[in-house]
Image 1: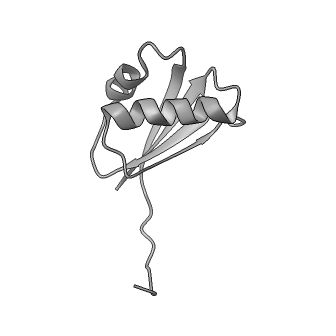
Image 2: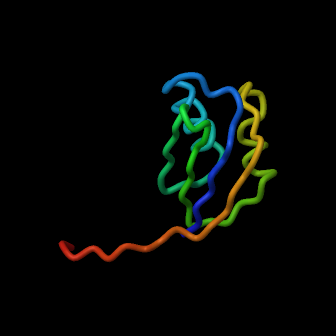
Length: 82
């Protein structure tokens, strides 16, 4: 599982984060997307590997500017109740 942290300019309220998450969901396959307008970041979890250009293309025309991208491996947690 890959974890991508997108640092964005232009996030002013919670609905901005939802708008960005919807844009990314329409263009890329993601397992989970969270956003924080206070931190100015969107976190994307996906089993697919993406490059910076893929996220820029997904955000094209939205008015939000990606100023940075961090790629890491998501930590796996054991689930004992399944």
